[in-house]
Image (tube, rainbow over all chains, first blue to last red; front, side, top):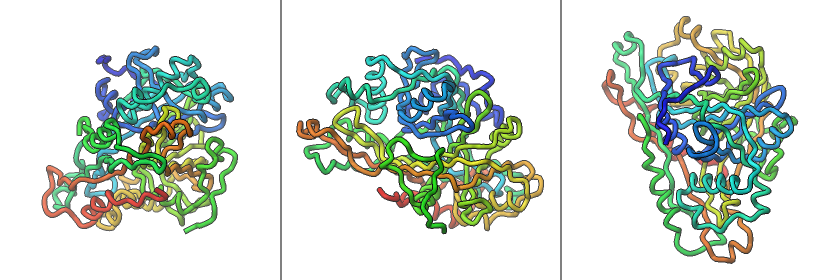
Length: 231
Length: 231
């Protein structure tokens, strides 16, 4: 795992709230591990479009800083059509609602990574199968090993984008309300509502039977205990 | 509340997975109510940038279809600088992980709204104060009424964008795995890990004391029971 600090270029440098920028690859990787969806921004001509996408990270991938694989047919089509190749992938986890003493100081505790890079449409079947397995394992760790291999037809019907993780910035807020002195002295309450994601008991499909496999049980159990980095 | 169907123009028409497009304003509004953050895409020249933002909806707002207010100084600065005014605001809630019998059919249950529109920077102090109150109440319903009014200085330091809700599309997946017949017949398990957001007990700030106010207690209690529309 790369432990070098993030090296944001001008385009991912955090200009607002610079004190919230975290230059730590470990925290970036932890957030990408925790999050389930990313939001991919693609320029489609006269405006950007932002789409939710499943994703996975390969720290040993072919790109500088590791490779972020994004599963997305819509985005791939736009890239092919528009020729625009620089995309933005943003991953956000909300960890709390910050109830301050004034509207102005209300905030959220969150972790958010912004990755900007030239997207490469993955065409190699092996790399695509690898990216797909990583995406499945990101959803349910260990699951890809229990599945039959993808067919050639399935791989052809799957679009995967690869984005270098090099140009990334991370912003984190993990504290109570920061209020004006007069508002604190007035004695009104301020605090945080902590937020996390949980999984309920896995639901067996209508067309399935048998015991819920161990990887699924384990994933559901662990989701409620996701370590909220820096919280 | 507007009950007219969504009227997506070409730019928000769902081209992929058209069967998942939901033309229902009520479902759109329910999603916008459930979600805590939106992802705002702004074109910054040669590429888009996607940022997490707090937001609020005013169905009686001045814009067609209602107004989506987005809290965001960074985006406002870019809009001022680049002159690019068409933005994309995407709001996504993940409701489940869909474990299929093949990597190809793995999916997620989710609700996602994509709103494209010309962003207006709110300059009127009254509209800005109103948008800020709505944003606070979106986080903790009822809270804005318990706070002192925002000062002129605070309003001047707050940037709010208004985006019409008119041009919106909603995509929903809310079902078990859809597998190939052969994979189902092979007898392997398929199903869904349901996912939801919960709040833990509110944490009183280090500089605060006294009982947690009723609006905060109520918000924390309700978060775990968010109605997952169409789930």
